Image 1 (cartoon, rainbow, N blue to C red):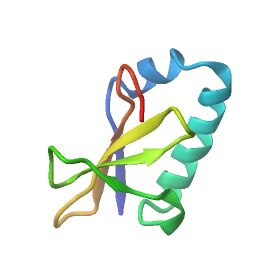
Image 2: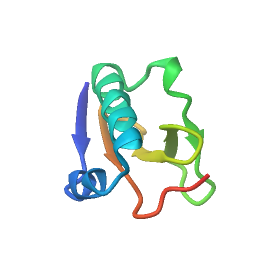
Image 3: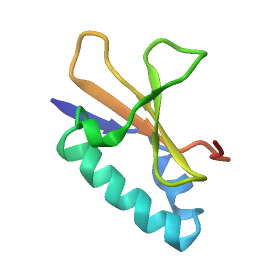
Image 4: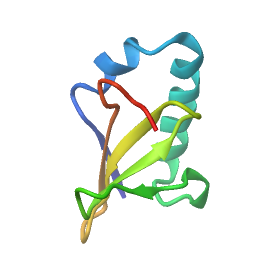
Length: 83
């Protein structure tokens, strides 16, 4: 299984408040270790079949493109991450 992180992920990560930054780093480590972990709480996005969000906390989410066939997952943080 492979995990890819979008090129803008680290730029967005650096702009997060410190508390959310630490939570996001922990979430990304969990995601990298097992993108299929049930503890990630994937929530389907309405506008795309293969896109989901993963909760960082009550205000922030990571966006994930999950594969239909392959084992490559791509992660991103939206510019403004709201519920």
